[in-house]
Amino acid sequence: ATAGGSPSPTFEPNDQGNNYPDAIVNGQLQMSDLNSVAAGGAANGFGVVLQNFTNLRYTGTINTDGASGSSDTVAMIARGNIAGGQFYGAEVSFEDGKFIIFRNDDLAGSGMDLDEVTIPGLDNQDSVFVDFRLVGDSISARAFDGPGGNLLGSVSATDSNYSGGVSGVLAFFAGDVNKPLLAEFDDLSSVNFIPEPTSILLLAAGLNLGGLLRRRRSA
Image 1 (tube, rainbow, N blue to C red):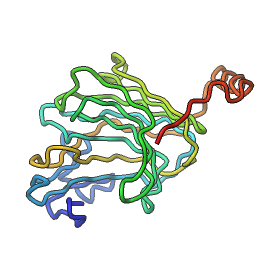
Image 2 (cartoon, helix red, strand yellow):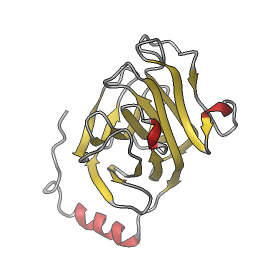
Image 3 (tube, rainbow, N blue to C red):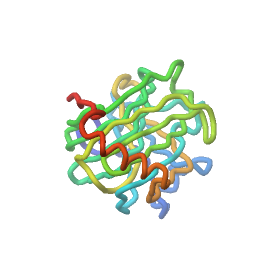
Image 4 (spheres, rainbow, N blue to C red):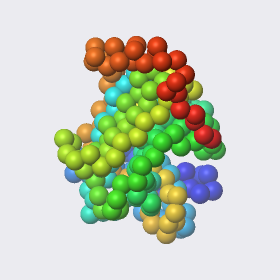
């Protein structure tokens, strides 16, 4: 949608059915617009796979063609109810170098950041591999400089508002509206996730601590 809320005629989405084949660039998924936001181009874009997941691991690379430069905020979203605008997201903010997990509560964009970390030196020429996990009310994400690469930052939180839904991608502008929307993704994989037996034991042991280790969530 454009800043005014109407669809942009120059926005290029794509799906696996190749309804929009121009958006597959070098084998990568791309959302883009020819016009800047200020010139009436899309201010945001998203796409989802219509399969529900509850406990899941969602991985993929954001900004795969770094030389093109990405929109300032790109995210992978999970447990989504797109009709109502509810979902969790793992967001890479190239504008301020933040890696964030957040909850979105409605189509107006209301919600809250659940946890964030600064990635030193991050800019929109960088690719980021994201490992996003949601198991029960435990939500965590890690950012790497590539699959199997160096850890750039990790975030985690506890939230029980949404228990399941679709996975997808999201891009939007939080700052410079004089650039056209551009977001690229590769090797996206959302799969049902069952913790290893040792992880399950640790989670069970944690229940015995009651509220001792619970952290207060701030709005």
